[in-house]
Image (cartoon, rainbow, N blue to C red):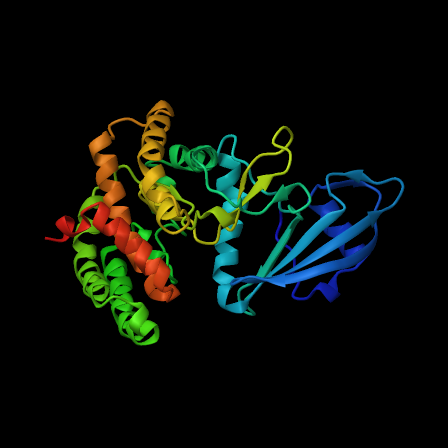
Length: 353
């Protein structure tokens, strides 16, 4: 698919423009878009979204549903949109059997920091996160994550852009990147720690501040030692919590879809599992053992060799340390407590001695 001129506002959309974009990108075989109606709009941390209802001419033939969304990235998240394009255009098509949301059109402008996507409105066929996080549900998510972990395990593509680019934001410490970039990222978290303590005040246990200080100081050496040889590294989703997926209303016709690929990265596969359980699953302690067993068995069955169960568990413990960083930026006391519980359960302090 060729990149288009970026759309910056829903008011730019006309039937003629959509007909041209859909046809040029191979989704419209005949006919045309005849009307567009905006049915809803909402915002996320990275973008503004508009839900659109389309009608087509009687001779329409193509792959465009009647309900689509326009995603317009906020300028501060422009880089995430560009990185996400690499996922949809290059990485996802090379990942066998991955369940991926189609992209009907994309455009970005580096100078103006504009980026947009036209995609199906998944709320028609899928639903948001479940009220209860069951073992069965997590296994389905793990199977989807493993498609990426197994496909990109030790792949040379991980040594190129954007995987080796230092990211910003709260999730960056899962990155396996250059030494100085890791140390610089840790330094920025150290600067953010004092404002966190001031903002949360009595909601934050002073002992937790001390632990986070130790993690920030000790993490670079431990993580860099683990990834120095470049072995047993893969592609992560990077933000795989239960609300970054769409769940099929009818599992017989649709599948779980992982969404929000702005923060995929190069790192330890165990991180996606640890992050999902620590920062998105109230039942972590009960589910952790069975899900770790499930993940590792599926990983080995998928063809991953020379990666022992002991190494996997070490990587999981190291990933628990990575998950300590996120709440420093989120500034959520309950996220700090969740990370500290996992830190204690896995005796992560022993890694820092």
